Length: 222
Image (cartoon, rainbow, N blue to C red; front, side, top):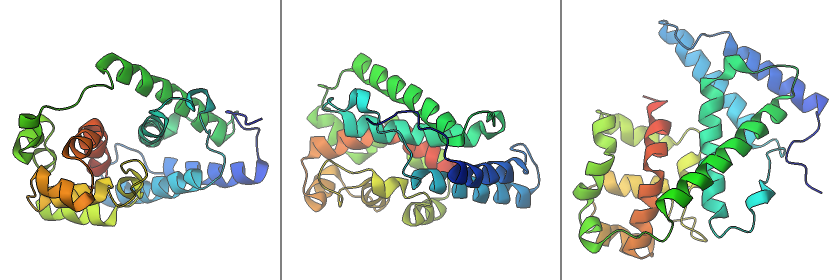
């Protein structure tokens, strides 16, 4: 049986705790650009180690939900963001992966509750999705992050592979990285839909539901 809170793995935990301690060396409120850069690097190393540890919870409680995959990816991204923001609060009496999976389980529950409140049957009206300008007015990436060239570079590099890993079900080519780059190019939803090979409503709704997480993710690298 899969355990949502894995038992302590000494070797893995020692490696992860080293990365946690490395990140803690550089205060989040440091005014030193070098320290801030080193903190980001240390946190990126920690997140990647967690991601590929094989110890992330499968969140089997929600496995039968038709929205399981969307819930999982959104909750996982929120978990990574929370880890980076609250790394100083890690308590070494728990293994790092126990701490991570407790947060992950809570965020999974939050995402599910949020989705139930807004309703998953909603689809944007045709007039709301025909124009990319209309969509961007809701949560505009360009207004959140001023330098378009810098934004494009961050999206192309996708440091945590988050944008590439978020895609329309069973269509890895229709991922957030591709969608965002097409948006920056000024493509309309009809053009984006044709290029991705998915319906306009599917592409735009997929983008909308992840928009705030996208902005939060990109802002970490500005």
